Length: 338
Image (tube, rainbow, N blue to C red; front, side, top):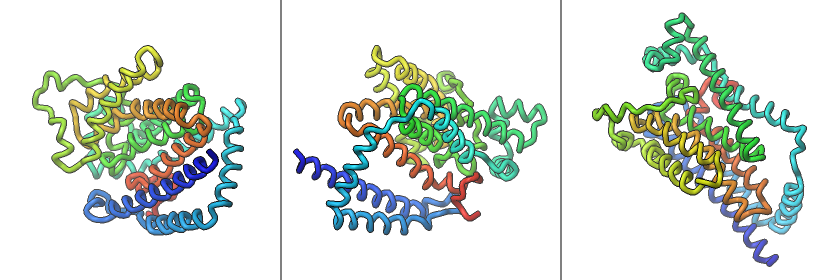
């Protein structure tokens, strides 16, 4: 049994290094032509050092495996025994709010300028809320800050809700960071996410216009312009909602409610199936991904629940920090020289 456990741990490390190497290779490929044709400002200098560092760590793990094995046993033992005291909840909320604010806080003047140059505020005039602000005489900078404030507040509320539901800081972090990436920093939201307020969290509406408008774009529109991620996400999200609804019915009211809400908001994607829209309807799916991660972890890795959740949070942070739209966004985080 001990030999099997050690072999599984060794294979786990090897899997980790291989995934990180493939991740670096994927980023290295997509940071090159023709994938960067929308964003002229890139930040791919980290890719090769990251790949070399992972390769070196993989070799050192093999050379010093007995020491690594003992050290990880000690860390895992301490990890399983550690529990966040209740008094830390406020501190945890403060940390996450700081992450949300510093990660999304825009350079309002620059952002308004980009929005004006990119679409001449056409997207703002096409969304009822920002159009209302424009008609009331709000400046571009003021509208950007209002959009930021509302979305930051909603993200904070989602984190608190996820923390109360899952009882885990790490799993809640996975939810919020992934929602930030999928909603605000997917490929279709460039140059800046505030250019498309109707596709951010403040738009909770449904859209059944496709029922009376047979001329709306087809569901495979994203595939025509080679936006493969948007195409598969557009079809995969609804499968996630239906699967979760069928499996959680009568067992978990929150999962059922999120599945139904996701299916209703999915009507907006059916009416506007383009690369800009799938992020706006995916946040319930991200929440449900944490629901299924929790269920699978409790079934297959009950002794390492905290470790799996922490790994998920780190993965979400890594994905965000290496996202090409995020690194060129004008925020507090220094991820780009310009």
